[in-house]
Every structure is written in C-alpha cells, then in structure tokens.
Image (cartoon, rainbow, N blue to C red):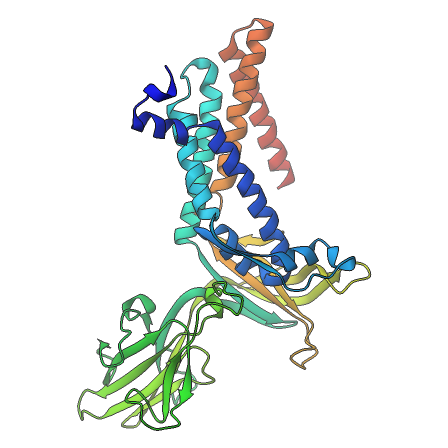
Length: 437
C-alpha cells in the first residue's frame, strides 16, 4: 500500500513510530549532552541542566563558553559569543518524543512473537527509564548546601521553592524554634499592589496580607514621594527575567519581592513592609511585647545526616587557569557514626534517598576570607534507582534475545537454553556483588 493511500491517523502513527524520528531525536540528544557538558564549566551544573535538559526549547547556545571549554581559546579567543535559538527542542521535548516513538514503534508496531520477546522487554525497560526522568523532573527536590572547610551542615536550600517564614523571636535561648511557612504557590497570583491575599493563624496576633508580588524585583527609593505603592519611602521595582544577552535567567538568580501588611487582630494597628528575597535581615513586626521575624526565602529542607567539609580541592588543566575538576573530602555524620567520603562532580554521595553532588568551588580569595569552600547540589529523588533497575532489565532482555538466537543457530531448545544461562549469569552476578559489598 502506498503512503498516499494511508489515512491521516495512519500517517501520524507511522511518523511517530519511524526509525527516522528515533535517529533524529537520539542525534539531537547527543548534541545537547555535548553542549550542556561544555557549558557546565562556566555556568555550573544547575544552569546548564536547566537550559538544555529541563527545558521545552533552548533559548541560546553560549558558543564562547563551549569554545573555551574545548581549549580552542589558546589558538583564537573569540570572546563572549552567543547564538540565539528559540525553536530548537530542549531535553524535555526530545525525551517526550522519544517516549512516544518507543511506545509506538517498539511496543505497538513491533511484531509480537517468541523471537522478539527479549527486544520487547528491553523497549519496556527504556520506557521505564524515560518515565523515571519525568518523575525526577516533576517530583525531585533540588537545592544547594555551601560549606567552608571545617564547617558542618545538615540543611539545604531549594533552588526553586520560595516561602514566607514567620518566626516569633524567643527571649529564652533554650526555647524550641517554631516557624510558620507560607508556600509561594499560595500568594504568587497576588500581583496587584491594591489587592492581596490574607493569611491567618491561631498562634499569630495579626493577619498577614501579601500583595504586589513580583518574580524578579528589588526595592527602590521613591525619590519623588509620589508613588501610592511606596512603603516607608521605598517601592518594588520589577526587574527583567532575561540577562543582557536576551537569555532567560536561571530561577535561582531571580529575587522575588512583595508588599506585606500585618494587621493586628485586636487593636487593628497596621504594619507595612517590603519582603525581598535578598534582604540583609528579616522584616520585624512588633505586637505588644512580642516581636516576629518575617522573611521571603528559599525553602529549607533538613537532611537525615550531616556533612562536614574536611578539604576542598580544585584541579586545573596544565598551563591554564581553567578548572578541570572540583572535589571534596567530607565526613558524613549520622548520629554518633562518622564516615569519610569523597565527592566530585561525577561521583556523588548517595544515602537515605539523597544524592550529594559537587557543584562549585571557591578558593576564598574573592570574598577575602582565604578559606576554601565547596558548593554541593543536594537531590532528593523518588526515582533515583529507577534508571539502574531499567538498565538491568534492558541487559536481561537483550541477553535473552541473543541467547535465543544462539540457541536456534546451534539447534537446541531456545527457552531452556536461554533461561538456564540467564539464571546462572544472575546467580554469578549476585554472588560477585555480595562479595564486593
């Protein structure tokens, strides 16, 4: 049957299940991985990951950063050059296309028979791996932990989740700290200065009204004194969310701000203030003899263990000032138990559902302290082990397929031959792993 005689749904299905689409998507993913790895040297892991792998479309390619990462600047320094792109699919779009292609071509369209059972199993495993990426993108919690040498930390700040924290200032130093948290999703639509969202709690002597929220902003002095939205002589100036080259700024570079109004429940007294993400200190509200600290910050998560940075190290490419490797020697502390670990950008520490990656390094020269420090990327991922499981299933499926082909070639029973060898292989592998661990 010719292509012209096919119906439109059949043509659409043929396109999404074609080998041509699979080859194109895999080739583009290879290019994205290459470019993202190069840009990571200057822009860091988080920014590169967001631009290439967590986006629907790529806004630009930093040609200058890639050029320097390859070491070509030794021969010709092209400076800061960027290539704007707005229609090139990012990792999120490409992985979605690959999932549809694998489902249509590798599961639905493939001929079903005992000869293809191993291939079908492998295709199911690859779909499971792509699903793991989607679960990670949607539900994983990512944040940062910065430590100086000798410092210990057991909390990390989220890259993306912002909250308003309300804390009563305790006069007793032994008193337990208690913080009320308002999630950003509950007030991000309160963008108008005159209309706000009211929050109340039985433990607070005031109601808190949030208004005029802006994703990226900073307080500015009202020099003319004519602005109706000014608070104590300052107003919130909205700032662009694109950098000077027109590229979308990373979410962690943005500084949100909003107007806060604390209204006394009894006396009706009103306190006005501005909450800004980069503020040097929380906004203080006094009600009677009690003081409350209100701040707009990134959400803080607590680790089930503590990390002490023993040594931070940077290795450079010979004869250059370009970093080749960041690494840290740390001590993982769980209760009274201490364990020495080594972390690099590609060798994280995994424990209790968390992964600790090396992200940044500071020699301490720029901040004037002279103390080295490391920045760690903390990831809590419910699908952390799904890729490993899918890789094992892929290996089992392909092994089954090749062994059954071999059995037919040597003219023995395919099922008994293949399954017995796979069972023996798995037993040997399990024994080796048990000996190693």
